[in-house]
Structure formats: structure tokens, C-alpha cells
Image (cartoon, rainbow, N blue to C red; front, side, top):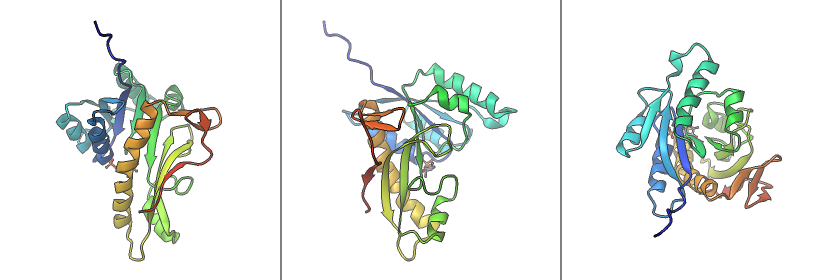
Length: 220
Ligand code: GRF
């Protein structure tokens, strides 16, 4: 009798909005050799299109609406309880627009990734495309990092660059950056599931070695 194959790492995606990154991950996870399985999608916005995408892909989903809670701590406790029901190995923040409490972040240290639309450490927080344009940057991009207590400040694993053209607008730049996001996130999630990236005490370890600078997809 054949032994059961080792179960694939369990991925839980948290989103708040349209969920195009979720969609890219869903499509990647359908590849035959993808080393992980998306077991659930969690959302803080009841009407988010990400929920629809999960339903279409037959992935379980849940909503924890932040408006139903009096404090961030209560919201996070409820979110945590939902997440734990799915026993994930990895939490992927994909446009999840809530700041998580320190306790929450610590509970998932080394097991939670975020995507941020800038070349970190530049432009943490919001309106990154507008800020890059205002600064006259010729190169902009996206970063994927481990989540730590510092907002958008955890060790960066990988980045993809886009070149900024003369007539660029925040909208056109967002579009270019998103196209790179949809390529980069599945690659990094794959690395995590293969055990290639870890959060060490000093930063990211890639294949067991300290990562001196983020992995880069070069400008398109
Ligand atoms: C992405 O641009 C991501 O960088 C940011 O939020 C956006 C989410 O977009 N954190 P979507 O919901 O995946 O389409």
C-alpha cells in the first residue's frame, strides 16, 4: 500500500478588496507542481470582490467585519480564532487594509507575508504611486516582505521594478506595478512553501543563507 503523500503547506489569504493578487495566487496554485494549497480566504469587508473570487474557485471564505468590534484587539482576537480554525502554515496578506496588533503579528512571526506597492524602504503607508511620481522617481515597484511589528517594515524578500515614463499618472503606474505583483507574489509564496525562505533573527534566510539584498525582478 502506498503511504499518503505529505500534505501540502496550508495557505490562508487575507484580503480587503478586489483581490487581483488573490486571483494570481489561485491560478498559480492550480499548477500541477504548486507546492501549497489555498485553504481559506478571510476578509474584513463583507462586499469585497475577493470573496467572490474565492467562491468561484471553491475556496472556503470567512468575513470578520472590523466594524462589528469596539477595538482593534477584539477584532484581531476574532480574526485569529477564524484563522486558527484553518490551521494555516502561511498567511498571505493580499491587499488586507487593516493594521494588525503586535500580539497578532508575533503569533504568526515568520509565517505571514505582505505585498506593498513600493520599493521598500521607500514609501511605507498609503498613496505610494503618487508619492513616487511627486519625488520624480524613474524607477518604482513592489516589495514582498515578512510581516513584523513595524508597519511595512519587515525584512524584504523580493522586489520587482517598473520604469516610470514621462507621461505617467498614479493610475497608469498602479497598473504597471500590479502586473508585476501578480508575477512576484506567486513566486515568493512558492519559495515559502518549498521551505526556501525563512525569517531568521537577523533577517531573511534564502536556502539557509542570509539574504543580503532583496531578490529582484528587473525593470520591464
Ligand atoms: C495591491 O496593490 C497591493 O500592493 C496592496 O493592495 C493592493 C491589493 O490589490 N497592498 P488586490 O486586492 O490584490 O487587487
